[in-house]
Length: 500
Image 1 (cartoon, rainbow, N blue to C red):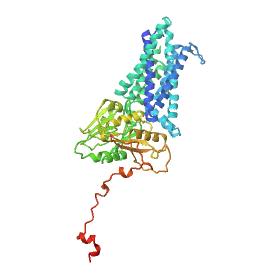
Image 2: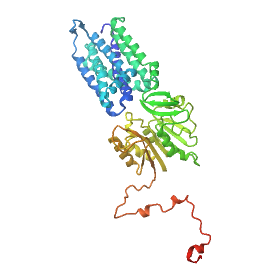
Image 3: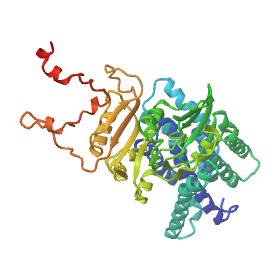
Image 4: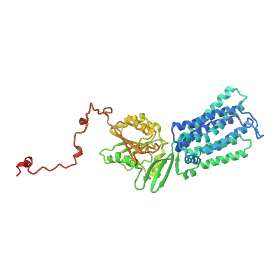
């Protein structure tokens, strides 16, 4: 190998191997979000499925010695490298292509395997462990060809270029490729790189292995092409979301990471929970004397308050493509001038602005799998509260158990009440109080009105009971009733005995 490849190309191999490993790890995390979510627990399993096999791969590559294999064929370092890359290419083709991942997960779910940690573990074992283990052998195998140089100098260079490749896999693949080309095209590039490595290592450029490698790269390009994505109604597949748009019975639906996000129909209907939130918070201020400032965290398809052309809206969502997609496919018209979209993480926006709002709507909680963990903490809710004007309101939509039948629903309720005392809770869907199934969920709406001088600790006791003084003393409940007409002869009415 050293006779046919200059040292420069050996470092190219190391860089590309580092890129593919890190890029594949991030792509696996991103591609599995629609099926298992984006929680730190699932991400940690994928990271573990990369780091441990990588470590074992380093060790195995360092122990390898050229010689005759059990089949009688001579196994050189070059042949070992080509074999490792080829096998990795086959497995990664199955594990990183959305169409095949979709089949894999739905087959497991249909078989009764639904726990997301088990799902991601099986995925990692099937599609990550072996290719990472094999690719991890690349560095120690290639290091055999630097034996004439000083070990410390060579080791430093190898680690530098390997880390450089990992850096590019972490930064270039996400910030540049996923953001501008899309996730599926970023996947395709990995197969092109692996096929290129096989051709680079092969003595004969036209051989059985190189032909198969080119075929696999072609298969990867096809499986991750725009045409295949369109068969799934995918209109966008970036570093944040896999976005599906479809129309059914006059309703245009936006689905983000396999969670129904927004719906808008020809006659202006929306999801029930959106109409409910509008009814209690937006409809009453449509004809306000002064326009209100409204913040919506979780833009979706911008259906919240879509018909309102008076009040001022700030929409927050991390995915900048949502405005274009919503205007083109869902709303089929441009947003009015009173609505401004800020493509920025919610907590970053709240940190950077001092603006306060009359109404803040929290609608970033699409479902159980893609629940943004950083947006359900007491610290986040406290931050939201600081951006409410006196008398302003917070309304939030959460997917939770109607009857508090699971731990998440109870802890979420506790967290919200800690930040927002005297909060209200509404269940949008029909439910019964006897259903204790923890998997039963519904759109649960919380609403809160901000009074700066809140009395949160006072209670009534038998010893100190001030109900009579605390209750409003006006007769507002009876204001609409007309008073009885006084008798024509007031004096006779006062002395009924003398009316004769």
